[in-house]
Length: 249
Image (cartoon, rainbow, N blue to C red; front, side, top):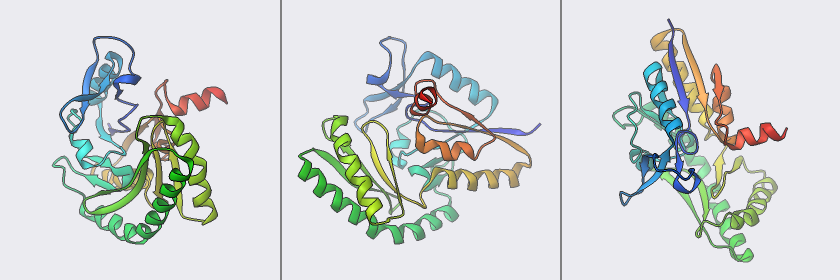
């Protein structure tokens, strides 16, 4: 019987921040902040579904979290993870896949100057609009990967005002970037940085190791669709960006 692998997003898929949870007392904390306080929780349904997945298949996270944020997820994953929007693949020992790390480092060397230019444009536009945002280039294992902007006050309207300007900046300069927005998170990703590329790389390796396999992709965001499409089957949470678009169609 073929081995089964679930490639799954984490935030807003297996768990979510407390403010996004229903008002109930039986939530399970699964991810923590740097100060040790619980930040993200699973509902009983999410917890039961995760337990089912872990019994029946190998679960591999595919997340935007960097190595530090991923280390604060309290779920035992036996086969490592894809982190940083696909920029880094780590094993169960938290060490990066050397071949993929070399690939990402080479790509990032070309995209860093462009990311820095977008960061300057974004900061200037935020100042002109009078919105308070925290924007920075996210690095992991010494590699500059992508740009992330968040409202300093958690006010998504600040990003509503900023997002069109960021998209216009990238379009006008014909920059090879993708702009992704989900709630209070606005990300500018180089074209080479894609969860799908990392998932396809790992699926190829798993097929060499195990022969025929079955793959399932699960995620909530539009930015997850590409890696989900690389899998044999796809799962979507009911309360998600993807499901909302499907319902409106």
